[in-house]
Image (cartoon, rainbow over the protein chains, first blue to last red):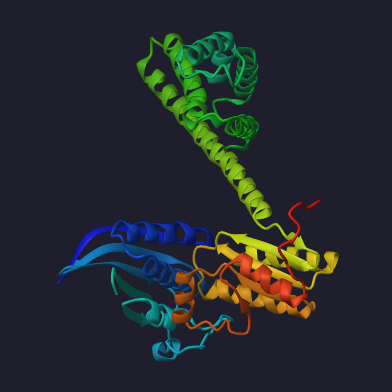
Length: 137
Length: 288
């Protein structure tokens, strides 16, 4: 069972919001004394997803949570937007696929960096991406 | 009984000004270090004169009326300059609120025989002054935002210096997150400097970049390609262990780029490319 210990919600509506959001994620990761490598992985994954949200949906809201499952602590970050949605999620999760002009590594890369990854998207309604990074995972 | 607001104000103008000044003086937050009493008095008098001249029975209920544009303009000027001088919003807000107090006190004395007329006029004056104070706040915040914007520009400007470390070798330490706008500045500065100095090697040091995501990597790759087009070689240094692991897991391919862990090893590599050697001198005494 997952217990939420602490949470914070931030809006990401423009490029300038990304850096404060990332430092908040980092602050939370430091709070549960996550190692430097995992911290960097988490922050990088969050950076990918936040920028995705900005680029394709024009912004959205984020929820940062400290969670605990048994003896393991971790950070869960949820990105919710009301953008156009993703037509073919399977394709979007492939390396090198991008509808924009980027490297196409955002979603698959974030999935590899995170311990757990979940994406739900409805065309025309929006997308929700949830990632968990365990302290030692 | 109908109250003629403009006549009343004209008659009582000096009294209102005195009251206003007393109100402002009485407040302990008055900042004599930022504005002299005389300056404050002149400022206040100018504003009150305009207000008395412009206000009449018709436009007092219409706060959006273009008649009040000159007043809003003066207020904007005042709060703008106050924001820059370092006043707090409370102090700036108090300026207009103390005028309201002075006006209401005077009205109360003048119209004391007719409570309903007093109530009506008080309400109108309050509304007008409230809208003025809101516009003061708006411009106050705008003034502050301008300060922030200017600082942002300054940070962008100073954080991307191109250093000539050696004849033919340039170094560019990048600090902070690389977004599209910064990459543009970095690339422009770097390419310009390559042309001017005729350097063959550029070292991009990313020790100060907190996280390398695919966007940052893409910008780096673009910069390296542009440098190569100019006929120069580009080395990326300052890749920390955690960044290296993240980049690999993210799936970014930087294998076409020469990367080094530290600026020192990048410089060493650059020296060997230019067939330069750094040797320990055999002589004990060296002369410059």
